[in-house]
Image 1 (cartoon, rainbow, N blue to C red):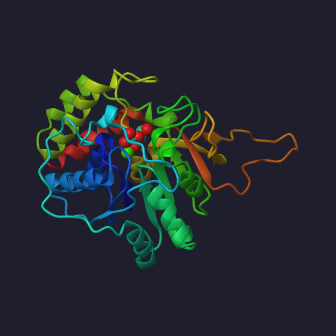
Image 2 (cartoon, helix red, strand yellow):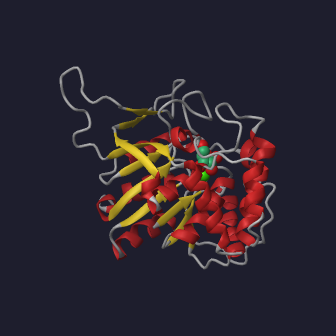
Length: 308
Ligand code: BDR
Ligand code: CA
């Protein structure tokens, strides 16, 4: 697996699950929840905290076209406010796009799991038109079939770089969208934080602090859920434990216009068009709509036990 992320509280929990359940070739970082310097330092610090010797490579510092946006109201100015992490004792080379390409040349059939804006993914797809054919697929956290969290229409990761998302959804491999429809099913609360804390060890401390930071902040801005959702682990667990999600083949378009629905993902749920055509024929995108939330939360707790 290749993991492309912007830690980010829920990215950190995704990284715990990745370290526990996946064979991760590399972690790549992108500008997103905070600037690239912070997302990269956070990824390095999380890996150090877990004693996880995974290569980390920095990628794009800004979106393809859009002005950068960040999310300090959710993650704080460090990207990991409220979470105690060590200062990383290494730096990351700035070659994420090359790593995405070269890793798939060295080994075909890798899953790419992006949990931040899709800038690195789009740059890699553009730089190497054969990349998508060497991947097993792309399973991303982003978008949503029924509204957004940054705007009424758009989810953060897609809104942050809609042009990159549009390129990604056109990739010629399976592209699974784990958007707000499904991540808002996997929510946490104080009871879950206490359960995780009870496990003990560095991963449990990290996840508990993430959940507690989310509880402290989330109620102030949430529009669709009050309990903090575990967005990014859903995309990771959808690959490592695919029986825990349900999806359906559906064409997905990104609105790259500059109106009120910029960054929206339009999911075609029709089974027949007015011309009598099945719009799903030849489509390689999948809209993930259902998750087994209790099982996913159990997996997060079980992941933490590996460091207890
Ligand atoms: C997504 O946006 C980020 O703030 C989270 O890390 C997640 O990837 C949710 O919209
Ligand atoms: Ca993220």
